[in-house]
View 1 (cartoon, rainbow, N blue to C red):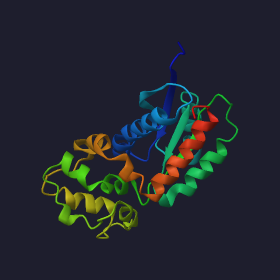
View 2 (view 1 turned 90 degrees about the vertical axis):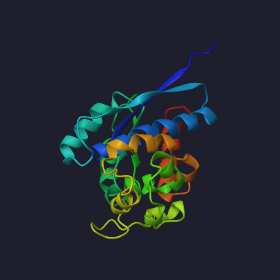
View 3 (view 1 turned 135 degrees about the horizontal axis):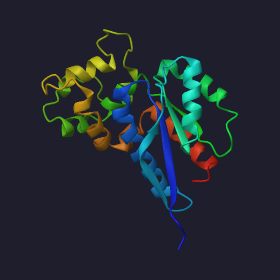
Length: 213
């Protein structure tokens, strides 16, 4: 009987609330992808390995943290909000000389920010927080969530929209619901978002380079 192959993902995030949502989401998506298409049976190890710095750290510290983390995993996800994706691409260029056995780096860049993905599945919001007020949610279609304005204070700023939706539920701390939402969100709904589609395509390429697909 062939042995099960293991996959360990690494993750560098912008902040602690991003980790709550993205870490679990990454594990779920990898499991789904590999269950359907892996070259051999693969187990995705949980949780993701994390680094010693946030992805917003100054370049020298970030490169050191990313290099160290890449030595402990197979695929390394670097999270940056959409407008900062160019900074993440600079990091990927700096990581181009990593040894072959090191992780393949992948940019994970929600448009406009992580909360855009959190907001995409309206039904999941209600499942996690039954008192969620969807009348305060201006986006009827999942892809519309990527059109949120990242300018602080703007009515469609994703963080503001999320706060308004959950106001009646009296939930303002991501610790209360981000991990649960990551478990509840429909991956096929997220798949309607252009930034999620890009992340899936880039992840596929990384998995192919590592011979998982």
